Length: 113
Length: 116
Image 1 (cartoon, chains in turn orange, yellow):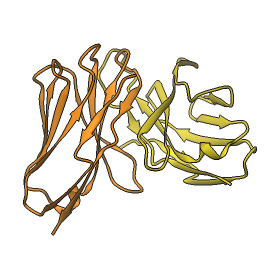
Image 2: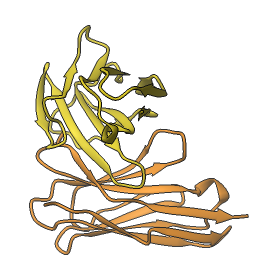
Image 3: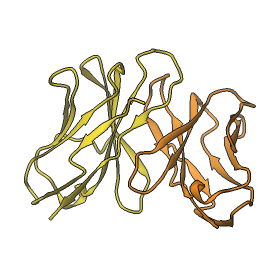
Image 4: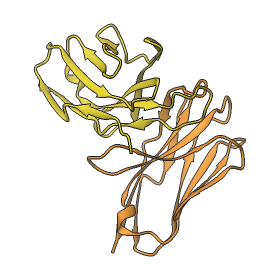
């Protein structure tokens, strides 16, 4: 059974703090790793699709790294803002380029002003 | 920016009744998916759909479930005889028409299904 784990489950930080969280996934038969940002009552918003070992992607203050050999990805947020408060989901894609996603449970980030 | 739309946002149904959840994927997308999240659990894959047929389905997607793309724009999930354990948030997603591309799946806001 393929399993994706995220840690920590929740995180409370002060505005301006930098933070990071982890996604662990199976290291065999890797196709891609997706990161999503999910605010309550909204749709999950795609952040990154990562495919190559050693990949590093950046979007504003958010960046992510990928290690497919050991099966983990880190998401970093630099200088957290209250609007960064959301649940961050990672998902391991199975099968080919349009295969289905296996999600982790997410890391819920709360940023206090 | 184009988006995936789902209706209704909330559906309350008696156990044993049929329910149809509707989705309008992004217009030039060709790959379609349904996922669900039971409260407090992970988002789970149900089914993927391409070229008017099911590509993959999970163990959850049993004979009570079906999907259809009746008119080239809507993508529906039908549950024939709902059970209490079908209560969940159901998400529709679609992805790019470019095959072999590593595009994200774009999600709708979800339909919250409550079975009484």
